[in-house]
Length: 328
Image (cartoon, rainbow, N blue to C red; front, side, top):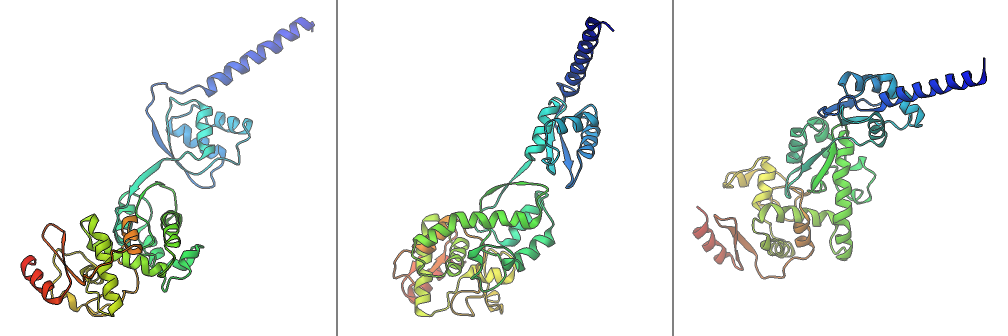
């Protein structure tokens, strides 16, 4: 064969291969709408390609496999839920899956939520199994390699699931999701506790902060409520914090009755002196700061008014008068 003919054939093959490559990597449909594609753990590039083809975001599964191999990303493909579109090029899709750019769901946990409320919110968002979450929270304190959990007297993680807004992928397992909350606690709370001089054990601070969080409705009153709690602790008095009774009952009520005050639980601070065994909620940073820096006051009592603010008293007589005036 003449050299010129051979070169022509080679050129034709190269051009044809280039055309095929261009067709393979270009978007399936420039006007296509995004869709969710879930890639299970352990999926091969061929299996992922078939899922993408079935979802209509690429033309052929084998093109995905070839692109992954050419880019050396066979071992980099990651599981999870992806938002992909037929308007994306093949290489963009490959890169997204290799980077693990999964869909993230924002979950906002308000300050003062109990562990049960946090689990309810996670499950409502479609993230994880309720029973597994509750099992880990109730018994998992020793199952996480975090130094600040070592000194916990029990196994519950109540109080240490820091309230914040989290971006959580749907495929994340329950243990990994809980670790996000614990890691955030370590980042935010531990430095403040250490800077405070560690006059009280971390568990005591978190427990006090949780009561402050559940009792205070007016932000400015948090340090003052903390001051009352410290004053009563110093005298060896029962704290008589309504929020601890509600925690012992396991439900919220607008009014705590005299019958409620009799619930036999170590969390009932009307029956048992000193701090409850642990936090009754997961406090935010303002409540933590109040527990670390309480207002120095002579107040020993407070009673809530209808608007959520409190009247503070120094003596039992003052307190009883405030109760008669502001309690229905």
